[in-house]
Amino acid sequence: MRYDPTAVLQSLDDHKIVLIPLALAFVLNYVWFIDAMRVARREQRYSMPMAATFVFMAHDAAYVGHFSTWFGDGGHWFSKLFWFGMVLSLAMELILLAQTIRYGQAEHAPHWSRSLWTGAVLAGLLGTVTLWWIVRGTFDDPLFLVSLGLVTAAYPPMGMALLVHRRGAAGQTTLMWASFTALCVVWYPAAAYGFGPAFRSTVWLGMGALTTVWAAINTGLVATATASARSSAPVGEPRSAVRA
Image (cartoon, rainbow, N blue to C red; front, side):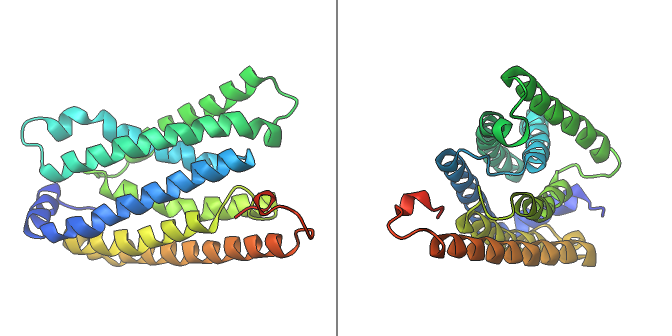
């Protein structure tokens, strides 16, 4: 999928109202991340699939690292606003990474030393950053818009894999998935409206529809698992012992 960055930025100048749904999408993103951090701390389990954390960080760190591009001569107001949003996202992803290191060892490598586990996680992040750099080099995406759509679309299959691995919704909440689903409902159509004709293609709209439907399915699965956990809790067990 290709687009003309000049045409995209001009379209944004002509459709500034699209900032409202795009800002809402960022708020929903923060709700998703904050609830992920909250449930991870409460359950002592990482909440974001490790591969998702790696991919999100690789994408967002690359965007943040292009500071001189967005704020240099000819930088566009949209890219500058987007940069600030990405900085906050990256800060939250660093917390999610720290929670993965802190809580993931007991689940995946209980016999490893803390230093070995930490090194393995960081090596996974470094490898993902390297692969992401290679993959991004294979397509033209100067404004990081297509790549953002791709990493967003990667979350539902990764989240479902975590559900299957844990045989339930441990470490995940209905709010996490509902906010992510709402994000997709807002983000993909807003991009189609505000970014111009290239983002009204069958590929973009199809990716958005698939991601949204998959996220909605995962929301239902997590909600069902949560309800089942509550109904199966022993009589008299504190509600705090059952995941919300």
